[in-house]
Image (cartoon, rainbow, N blue to C red; front, top):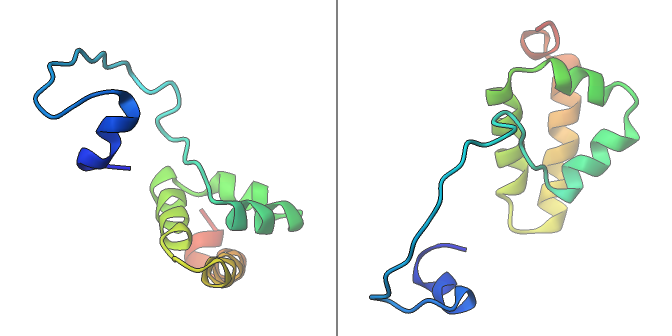
Length: 95
């Protein structure tokens, strides 16, 4: 959620003064993945090892690509497509 829509949920109104605290991310390379991509990863015994070898930026790009679809069916299709591509594309697989 972004912008003004999140303010009421936080108990804040436009114009209120707020105090924030910034802390370093304990896992800057960690990327939360959508349910569909996680399920595809869990069903393929090689997927966790292959994904772990990819640079964080590529993992993030794959996750964003899959998660950006609005429909569940599209996210499933994208997750399956990317799982296959990771296993068959030498430029991704041999990192």
